[in-house]
Length: 334
Image (tube, rainbow, N blue to C red; front, side, top):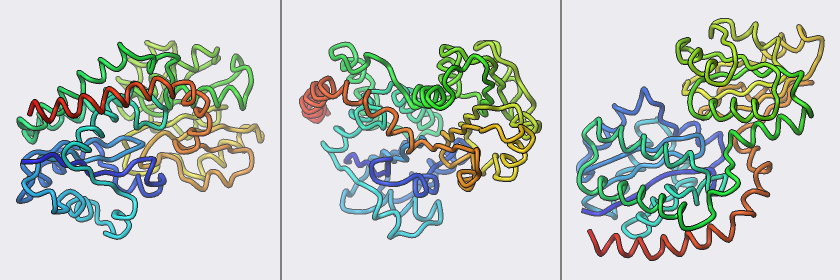
């Protein structure tokens, strides 16, 4: 048996490609079961976030393209497209990559902590579907251990930043003082929770939360001092929004160009700042063509957080050295 990691990320593919490979929560059980039904794939876990889709597999033959061939079929994609934007790591490089991902060293925002939680969620999903066995148990448990060690022994976690932080920072740069502004947040997951906290910390006047499950929206609203709106009333709520941040697991766009055009008209031409943190995208890309609508995707935020990444560079080098040593230890142990 041998470890193989196949994937695409923000480093290898634009959002237009990443969203086509993204695997939503509803697809995950079928994806894990069909992936491990392939001859030669003994175990599998799938990590799919706004910045990456990666398949972690224990395979019998490293020379075969099990994972890539599977995702091409599963998502009905062109092989050449996937091949040109993807990467495959085997054995020690695969271990090193898993450790880098867990430590946030492969993230758009260097050292961001969110990815570790997402990796743990991917591991739990594989356990739930019975597709994680001895090999992946060892890999993920070791990755979590090293991530904790890196954070305790380096300064990689200082001045915490995330895509959510970048979204709130950009809103402040565009609007200035936020104490008279209203933000509509679409979704109620971890990313939107972080955005809400950052906006509240920057003095936002009003937070309106829309989510398909109203109970989750209400729970978040209580936590951050916001209010809720029924998901079906989202179009009306956009008319009140100076800032819109969306991060859902929807497989379809939920904010259309016509919705934003109507909102701006109802607002008398007052501009709207939109951040789409979802992959696949929640906001129709043509919204960017609307006068007085300013749309940013997760890829755009890379420019906002560049300075923070530089500040963490020396800590990242120390973490890389730790990973180099520990990956060898791991292979000797297994």
